[in-house]
Length: 86
Image 1 (tube, rainbow, N blue to C red):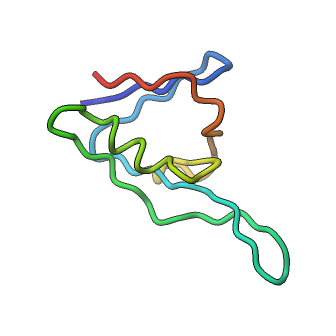
Image 2 (cartoon, helix red, strand yellow):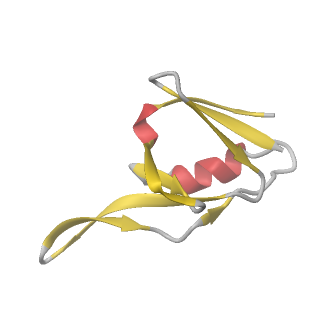
């Protein structure tokens, strides 16, 4: 089971069942605003909708995300054009 995310620049990212995505959200405290990594989100297979619910659960309320296997690249959630689960 896999899903392909297409971004507005035409690039794609393939996610597989059991991958983990890490939401990155803004965090504000008395010292200012910071990027905050949330706990990794497991991509699970939904009985009817394949990986779409798992991906969406991980992306809600985040501006960026990264793969747990690659913390050297972040993706902008607002640049997603489509997500197709196969």
